[in-house]
Length: 305
Ligand code: ADE
Image (cartoon, rainbow, N blue to C red; front, side, top):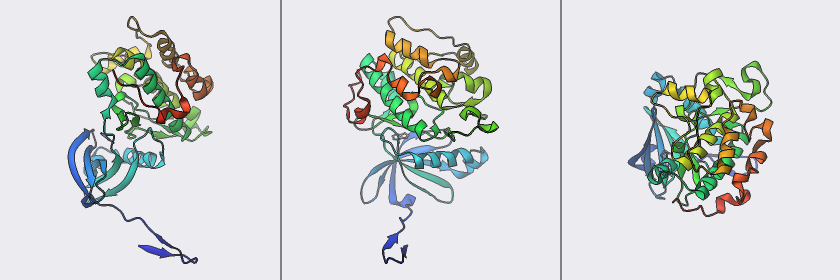
């Protein structure tokens, strides 16, 4: 459709894609409410990861607001360390999110293959996550389900964070009862191993909850396992609320100091929180010595060994 303006310049509205514009290939991801397919756009041949959601299932499980939130968040993100949303469309039964294809898959698979990452790799990938969170929080978004499964890798082995189905948009300066300290009460709990104590005790997540997850992830990079483990979720939750974890022998001492400054029960006392100097203070931690913060995206990642 074309619309002519007074200037005579004709602006054409982008035409909505349809499922027929793509050839759907293998399944590359599966969640509770979606299936992700590798797909190729007919014509250009560009590869995408298309997330397909069954409308009936979403409605039955009352997840409509989460799906709408995920789309809104993805539409607002424009940064190399996040999976990009290219198109959305629907048919009678399904919703489609056409996402950038992170060709190298999950960081977790590399972690499992290697058991753990060496210091250089841990530092580099931790720094990329810090950079990504700095952008995300600056855009007024909390991820709330940050974990190695949601950190994908592109062809150049840089991170591509995905899965905004649990994300929240917060309004800076909103001091209303519902949004006090930029927190909101809600029934959502992320993945057990990475969930922050405040989400368990007061059901409120904030930017700082992502910093807790970052602490868990750095610990896992270096040791191979997340810090809070247990046979059942409630055992994990108990350990989290009591800050019950230990460092294995030989754990890098600067990384240990950083983890200890992130895994703090009081969300306002975590390194990287506004109260503790924000991201500048976090990026200045000695563990990150040597990181070129302004050129991470162009830096060749250390080989995962
Ligand atoms: N699995 C889920 N989403 C993906 C993506 N965007 N790229 C590659 N694998 C995925």
